[in-house]
Length: 352
Image 1 (cartoon, rainbow, N blue to C red):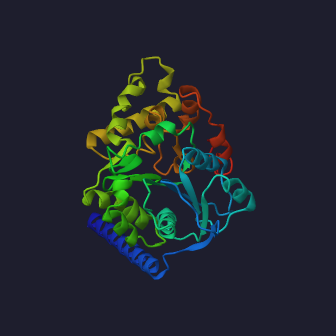
Image 2: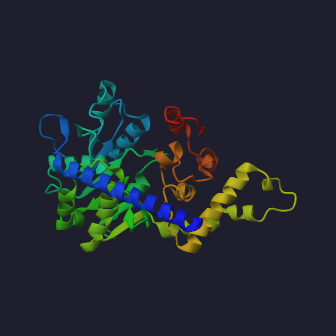
């Protein structure tokens, strides 16, 4: 009887939590529909801007109005590639130092309220400049949720071949539903001129709920494009990343010899644990988050970023992420110091 009561209590608690979440989400969605979708406070320059055929809408947030050095470098590399960068900050402000650094690089700077996350910012940028324009060939949506770039972006940008796919991401995910991860999305001319693009952005509202944004917009935009017959692809596709797992030689950690010190070495044990996590997921066809669980495979295949959330919070408890410095410095010959400098302001109670 006690067991039945316990199960009943657990069921009631989980049901109440679900109802509470649904009610709370409904309130937030309602708030998003009541708010004005346009949340722009100011635009620089005031006079009309001539944007080139390739445009980047770069979303940023910093509660103090600062811009991290790596973000400046990222934006500069995008601008140096011949693209017009519209820098959109959700900070509600920008410090004068940040303005001074960004203005020579960017075609425009939009300051808006911190409402609607990245999709709200991108929607405002698209609406403000009435994108796509008649001569727009490409539109990239990017944000500041990464550390890097760790290397030049030439190869990455050259991989955006719109004869092979209408919409590109850097990574793709099968979690919940198939989608391109939204920290970098790129649309070619066919996608931009399709009614699906205009219809999707007409649905975007400044809803103050990250789970809703992820489900409705991050996952939704790929699904929307696919349903309208447009093709989508990732520069570093999931199926190729998972094929690399056995090619990293970490399988040696599964066959420790009798007196091998790695049997008791915590670092080796965490690497083994993570490998087993990946292998278990593959065996069960359970989707992994490529920008988190497959961070090593991404770096070794040329991916120029590390997700900020992974190094700062590690919400999915990736066991071997402590090896990122060694991988960047010794396996790739790249410099981890710019990322370390920024982590000094972000980490709380953890070492890098």
